[in-house]
Each structure stands twice: as structure tokens, then as C-alpha cells.
Image (tube, rainbow, N blue to C red; front, side):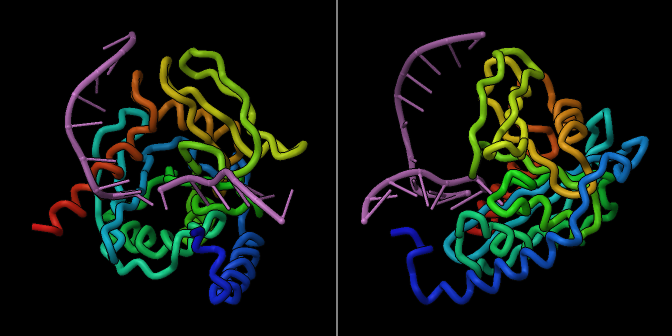
Length: 227
DNA sequence: GCGACAG
DNA sequence: ATCTTGTCGC
């Protein structure tokens, strides 16, 4: 059943992993490369119908989280979903939406992992490198590694470990909310990623505000396209 | 060998 | 991701 078992995809997968490795060598994750002060934060998310990808990008002020601008893009979904190669499916629509924004955010939240990836280069890193902006990966559950259980308090966190490597952090952004997986994408370190994630999350919500809004917008784009 | 596997 | 109602809990 998994699409990855199709032997015709093996060459495609091989080429994608090679391209991923080339991009990874351009990836840097240092706290110093984040804007200071941080004035805007962005978010991107993608929804799908049978054949198309609907990407929505938003920019909010920081730390007030007031709406600044947003944009969308629709593209044919070509690359299949393969765990570990999500970027080859989602980066094209995401980049198109980001490039139609009136202003680029100082930091971008991406729906998917960054460093917490089998080859340490998930969608968030991929997008961050190609746009050359600081990027943070936010995922609902780990792809690899094992995460501890953060205490049931807002801001509690526990490392996500792959053997001895701390690849990300399970973060309880609000009390009674299931933790989200935070990892460094591009031009940010893990500690900074966690702090900004908490600062961009409205009390009581699970995901940072830019991602919530982008999620709603992309789903609205999909709905409106069928009418 | 079998299963698991971001969106 | 998407298909889907009601329902349990703060």
C-alpha cells in the first residue's frame, strides 16, 4: 500500500535524496542569524484536493501577532507524499505562496519538521534555505526519534532524541494541549526556535498563530475552488 | 522479516 | 493531507 514500495519510484527517490543532500550543505542553524529585534513572523501551510495543492502564507507582527499580509498559490501536486521527502511535494507551492507576499517575514514557521528528520533536513530546512530566511519546523508528531512527555504546563518541553542526538523538542505550548514537535529549520538554533514558538502562540492554543491562520486560509482556498 | 512513516 | 457526527471536557 505505501507508495514507497513502487519500484518505479526508486530512481526518483534516489535523485531527490541527492538533491536534498546538496541543499543540506547550504543549511546553517545559528541563533545569531535571526533578526534582532524580530518584527514579523510568518507561517505557511498546504491543503490538497484530488490534483492540486493550495498553499497559504501569512505574515504577522511580532510580538503583537497583528495581521500584516497574506498570499496564496495553487499548483498541481506532482511529487507523491513520501515520508522523509515531503519537501519535494510541498516546497513548490509553499515557495510560490511565499514569493507572492508583499513582505517577507523575519522568521517563518513551517508545517513539518526541520532538523528532526532522518537526514536532518526536513521541509522547514528546505524552504528556509531556498528563501534564505530563518525557519522553524513545527509538526504534530515525530517522524523519527523518541519524545518524552512534557509536564502538563504551558511552556513545558522534553527533548526529541534520535540515539544521542537532540533533534528537536516536544513543546506543550498550552496546558491540556498535546505537545508539538519543534525543530530548527534554517538560521535558528533549537532553543531560539522553542522560545519564538511559545512567544507566537496565543494562550490556550496548540499551534503558533501564523500556522493556525495559514492552515485556515489554505483550507478556505480549497473550499472556494470547488464553487 | 515486519512494521512504521511530517503532510 | 482528506473522508466524517457526535461527543467529552475545559
